[in-house]
Structure formats: C-alpha cells, structure tokens
Length: 252
View 1: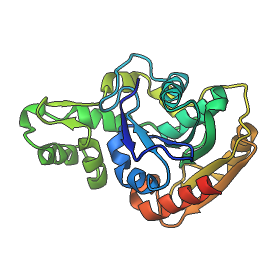
View 2: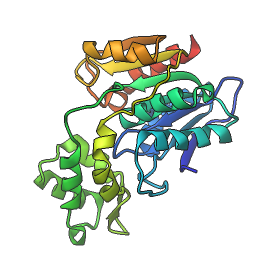
View 3: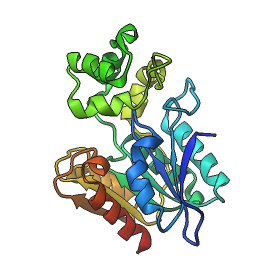
C-alpha cells in the first residue's frame, strides 16, 4: 500500500484522503492537513514513484486510482477525496472507476483533459544535479537555480531529496517515460454524480472556461470556486483560503 501520513483520529465524519501532485509528497500537505484534522481524520499519501511509496514501471491514472482505492479500503471503504494536479486527475479517475468509495470529491486546479505542455524540463533539471556536490539541501537548490528553476520550485523539489543517500526520492526515469499519460487523461465511459468541487486559482490557467463542459459531462454535480490571487499551487500560496473553501464544501 502507499505510504501515508495520518493526521488526527477517526470521527463521525468521513476521513479525508489527500493525493498530491507531480513531484510532490504527503509532507507538502502538512499545514492544510493538520488544520482540517480538527474535525475529521486526514490521511495524506505519497503517490507511487514519489517519496516513500513503492516504485513501479506503471504510472497511469487507472493504476494511481487503484492505489487510492486500496488506501480507502484500509480506512473503512469510503472517504472524501482531495487531489491536486496529478493527484486531482487520480482522484477523478478514482471517482469514475471506484465511485462507491468516494463520498465527496475536491479537485484542485486541474481538469480531466490532455495538456499540451510538459513537465520534462524539471526532470532534466533534477537529473542534472551533481550529487557529488550536494551535502545539504541548499547545495541542491543552488544547482537547480543554475538550471533555471525558480526559487519556490527549488524548495519544493528538494523536499524529495535524500541528501544522505545522494539521490532523489522520485522515480525520474519512470515519470519521464510516463509523462504523456501524466499530461493526458484516460478515456473512461462512466459518470460520477456525487458532490464535486473544482477549486482553482484566479492566476492559474489550468482550468479554463471551455473545460467546464467536459467536467460536467463526467461530474454532473460539479461546482466551481476560485481563490483570488492564487496560482496553480493554490494550497501553498493561499493555505487559509484553500482550507476554508475545502472545509465549507465538505461540511455543507
């Protein structure tokens, strides 16, 4: 099963499962998870090929959804699910293929569509880091900066750095091989009609008005909300506002 970080104890409310985005980890969600755990148990996962979870040659959304379903089964068989970016696509696939396990769905700044851009430059930047020069995280951040990686992403990426082991806790080879599937979305002949919130940042263009028709065709009870001043990393840029929006939806 995926590696998990659990916040809080079980309550009368459904547990909340959090699935991070590409190059992320359960640790990235500590602030939001701890705050939401005041009312319900919150379980953040390391997705496959990330952090402390299993490495596998397969990294497509049906496989990621199966991983999440396995975690939900260990929590009693039903949960609210929150996914960001890649994790949001995995959460949508989970709802479409394992719908009985999902109580409410929150999708953070991603749509069930194929994107034209690629995340490969970041893989190449991480591959270019000379681990012989890395003795602390700041060394890796400096080397990433030399590759043109912006400051905020330097800090984000190095959270997945094993300094002592001089390696990334990311299966970069498989993520590179599977990048077309990560940027795409599977063709699933299903509809999930449970409560779904598509939460986006006003400064992000990942979820566009033209995507809403596709979203509603798969998730007919979808609702939409925006967080002012937030970009794609809305949960880290505006954590209080993000937490409030998620809490309001889950408790409605």
